[in-house]
Image (tube, rainbow, N blue to C red):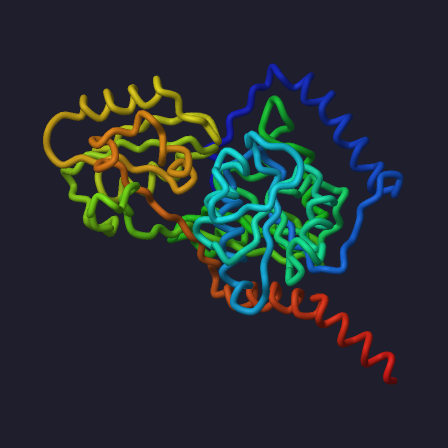
Length: 376
């Protein structure tokens, strides 16, 4: 078990104490039913965390999309962080990124047949998605980053925990990165320890399982990141995709990210080349003209020889179409897709748990049950 990404500002503990009072009070109001959670007649699966960013919500949400879209009409509802619109917005293939946010835009572009919507009010968002005139065929709703949005009662709550930042070793905001105390994990039906090393040892599984101290009704899984081929940001330039293995030991990489936790990506890329420089911006960063000048300058300073710029899918949504994206950068930038794998041979078990819940609780299933009961 590693906690190498945990940095705690102990001098901020007094503010964390005050923050914790507010969070605990809010949770108690929900637990006592003073503040009400609303259920829906459509299966709702929440994917979230109790830390600020960096646990892999988007690739895990996309995993569920790929799993469920084979059998069900899937809708994804997100807050749409940093979007320039308000209220409920249902994305179309032509909706600009600025109207829905980078992560929803990424999911809509990769999965155009899936309904993607944004709304800060998740209750209203789900209700709108289920309206006959909006998306009448929706059979399951995935709530992206809504673990603290307790006004909705999901059928399955999935909590993601970063292998490198275990919640038991972290602290509440602002000293650490916890949004709520560790006991908030008790609301989860499923806990997934994410970003595990590919060669994680059986002893680590046992240590983490004991450390998480889950209830019998909770299921624990472990996942790891896998990478696809490096894909040109602008495929119209005729550049081919290339596997990571094609990076030579002498090829230079400028890693450009605006995500919460780029450290694991740096570590993984070093397996292919040691010549890595990084430009890291905050999560969901909107690249300015000055930022693009910095990227162009740093890339030029890497000298002659083979060199490329590598970025993430989420960052690509904010780079593509940027007014300062000239021809040199267009041919230099490659996007690195990321997916997840469930470890310990538990992928089939996980898939069955998710699809079984949706089948048993879909509106069609409930309708058939009602008809059967009426006949009886």
